[in-house]
Amino acid sequence: MDVGILGGTGPAGKALAARLASIGMSVSIGSRSAERGEEIAAQLREKWGARVPDLHGSSNQVACEADLVVVATPWDGAPQTVAGLAHHLDGKVVVSMANALFKVGDDMEAVVPARGSLCVAVQGAAPRALVSGAFHHLPARGLANLEQSLDADVLVCSDHAAATKATIDLVDRIPGCRGIDAGTLSAAAAIEAFTAVLIGINVRTRSHASIRLTGLRTEGL
Ligand SMILES: NC(=O)c1ccc[n+]([C@@H]2O[C@H](COP(=O)([O-])OP(=O)(O)OC[C@H]3O[C@@H](n4cnc5c(N)ncnc54)[C@H](OP(=O)(O)O)[C@@H]3O)[C@@H](O)[C@H]2O)c1
Image (cartoon, rainbow, N blue to C red; front, side, top):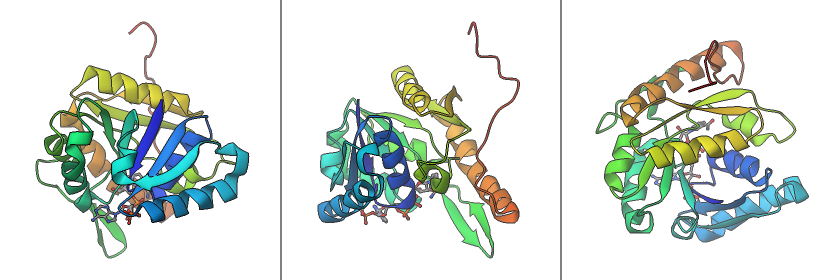
């Protein structure tokens, strides 16, 4: 499976790009500028060499040609970006990792976006895409450092069973990550908003923590 990342030039997108490329996936870092996408991909190839053998940069539109597309733009640009590319996304799994957050003093506070969550807004922007939400709670810093192993649960939500499965399969391919079916897109509002809490904890403890659920029954379900 190949993956395209819209807004892949920021900390979150390029961290995910490097991590997925390091497990043998073909990854396209999308950008509003194809040159910038390629510049960031070249930086990652320079940094990680043979560990990211199939990593390249492109426009966001070309990134939409991938089998699975991740939305890694800031929250206020996500629905518009997806709306502009919607006809390239028909029938595709589109994973939104965007969180609507606003800095207030030293804290991040959750903003309630139009339609209640960004995942729902992204689904509305591309009605024939199979939108899921995932990766909201994975700090880019740890994700970006391929020397560092990950240890995280990734909550996945979608209104499409095929998207839930494809997204959990993708997460499970990343060593140290476990994808968990968190239900329909109605869960996205809470998932996205919780990121503000997690960032606050990380700031106060100078950590880059993610989440792990305990006591989860996974066998025989
Ligand atoms: N940073 C983290 O640790 C982390 C973790 C989990 C989830 N997230 C979420 O992932 C998303 C990306 O985070 P980030 O820190 O990487 O963000 P970012 O650096 O602010 O933005 C990512 C990229 O999006 C593009 N972009 C900027 N403004 C845009 C707009 N108005 N419309 C379309 N594209 C725009 C830019 O790429 P071009 O100029 O090249 O187009 C930029 O490099 C956010 O929604 C964030 O909440 C972040």
